[in-house]
Structures are given as C-alpha cells and as structure tokens.
Image 1 (cartoon, rainbow, N blue to C red):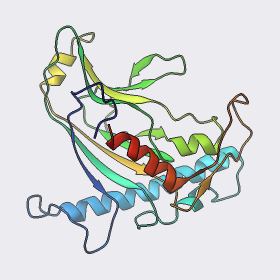
Image 2 (image 1 turned 90 degrees about the vertical axis):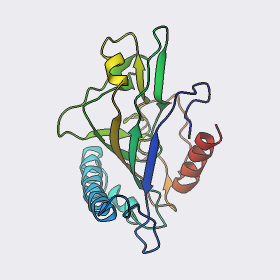
Image 3 (image 1 turned 180 degrees about the vertical axis):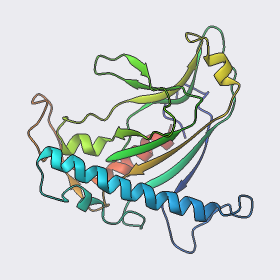
Image 4 (image 1 turned 60 degrees about the vertical axis):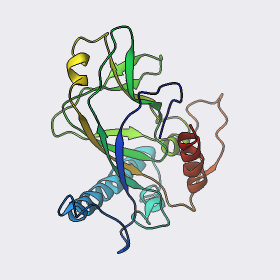
Amino acid sequence: MSLDESKREEIRETYDMRDFSPSALFPDQHVPKFRLVFEELYRECRTLGHRLLDYLGIGLGLEEGFLSGKHRNVGTEWNGTALRTLFYPPVSVPEEDYVIRCASHSDYGSLTLLFQDDVGGLEVQTKAGEWVEARPVPEAILINVGDLLELWTAGLYRATPHRVILGQRRKEDSERGKRFRQSIAFFFHPDNDVTVEPVVTAANSSRQWIPLNAWEHLKSRFTSTYDN
C-alpha cells in the first residue's frame, strides 16, 4: 500500500476490521482476545461516530438524524467502515532528506477517529498550504473530516490533507525514528448505496460539487492507492 509512489520509505503494517461474521479471521492464536477487544472498540467508535454526525447535523440545520441515518449498516457488508491498526517500525532519518511514514492524503469517508501514541510525526495541511504538526494529546481522539463530509457540506467542512513524516528539520525526529509508532484509526463511511451530494449552500461557489456513490468513491480511492 502506497499513497505516494515516489517515496519508497512508506513502511507500515496494518490490520483492518470491517466484518463481524463468524468466518472473519483474527490473530487470536498469537494475540489472545484480539477479536474480543477489537470488536468492543469498533462498537464504541461506531456509537461515537453516530453521535458526532448528529451534532454536526444540528449545527448545519439538517433534519434530525439525517447524517447518522446514512450510516445505518456500519459493521456489515453493506458499509465500508473500517477499524485499522497501524504499526510504523523504527527507521533511520537521512541527514539531507526526510522520511515519509505515510504520504499526504485526505480520508475517503465521512469522519475518521484517530488514536495516537506519544511518538508524533502527524502533520496536517492548512488552507494556505503550510504543514503543521498535530502533536499527540494524551487521552484525546483526533477527528478528521473525510471527502464525503466535505461533499455533503459543499466545502464548509474541509477534508484536510495529512501525512506522517520524519525529517532533520526537527531535532527530535532522529530520536523519534528510533521508536516504533502505533496508531488506531476508525474510518467512518456512509452505507454503500448512499448518494452523497451537497445539503447546504456551497462554501466555495467556484467549485462544482458532483454527487458520488459512497461505495464507488471508496473503491476508486482504494484502486488509486493500491495500484501505486
């Protein structure tokens, strides 16, 4: 999996969970109770995701439950939501360059709930194009807006580009590179058959907002990622 084909340093290990069926494979043999713990976290994230969408809907003046109602099938084959663990192994940081642990991208769905350890390295891009470090806050969940929420809100809420990077421009990055980094992301997606289109007045009238099918958009983004 590569988000930037020009960078060979994108080394990470991931495990995704979308399926609650009895046939779903889990590494319980090597990690006891893995499925039990992962399923519990998935359910908690799903509840929080629905709550956040309800709050956003209130702020947007939408009909009660409009956004959360587009995410009814989370945890089934009719929805693309995934809970992902991300393990970044230690790397060396060359003096003249930087190392991309995860290249610049926006998330594909509605919201992402991100749990970080204390290693850091995550950066988000401002509207002005600057990269700003998103330092980990203990016991906090970082929330990203995804492509489809940006479309629903016609740009009022922006799908923020972000990346994980190590570089010599920060003195602490050489020490960070010696440590592994662990994060967990919950990618909250609308149901596969949902057509996403603006439900509020466009924040950027110069941009044309084209309706998208949630599943087709997810497949398209995955294809471009895994083909690199």
